[in-house]
Length: 318
Ligand code: NCD
Image (cartoon, rainbow, N blue to C red; front, side, top):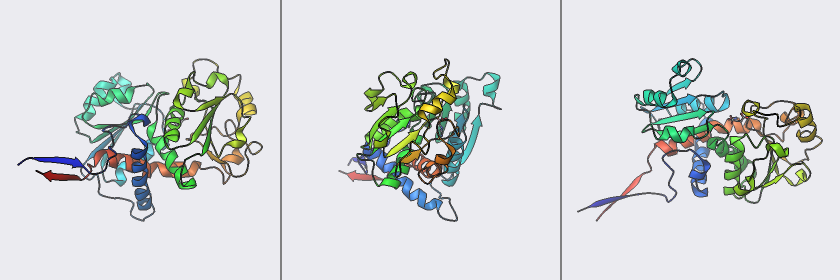
């Protein structure tokens, strides 16, 4: 007598989450549905479930973070995991320990997952080769930030019901933005039409290959249902890409003169108030920025859950 096992459900969730390309539409929908159930838990007085009791999640942040690091920490804690959060500042990274040695050191605690943010493109992929833990990319240089894209899709799906045929304009420093890259992939996969808009120096060459259009001016912004605004990533700029922030704001700032009623405004944070977005737009009812932050916890709970809790298996005895 032999027995084989088949996972229930046909949309396998990958072992690691490095890129939105790891997920097809069905897998994204599965994570979002799971996030809906965790969002409901977040509305309760006791916001904790025992799903990851006895398991360990390591958060390893080599770059500044407020929203992503706090929401991953909260997500792991609300799933009852033990959480270790390490930042490069104040850790042995400052003493010259390499990423590989740090990962191997932390792997000695046998974590179920390592969440990594790094200024270097490809860092999360490298970490996945050095540990037996599931690795979640919380931003690798200007490459990808898949959980941000998932929470953005979650927020829009809640607001609009579906992203099919929704017109989304991404405005700002697309060149240096990992959020832009992950969002273009995720929005497209969910059926939206995406246009990126920036000064020509800040539009990556060949960006259309990701399935979007590109334009150097805000002309035509009226057609957008959603305007997703990005910060100038000055920490990643080696040259001067725009004459000045004042001139950038004059031509590209999303303000009440440029926004039409009914358009939705998103931003991953941190916002440079008065540069890419005007204060009155940030504080208006059209902005979903607060909803995005709130969605971060439920969506990251869903990602941790889907990666770490095995799907029920159906034993077929032959
Ligand atoms: C973004 C990031 O770090 O890539 N922020 C975030 O994760 N919420 C965007 C940014 O820093 O501009």
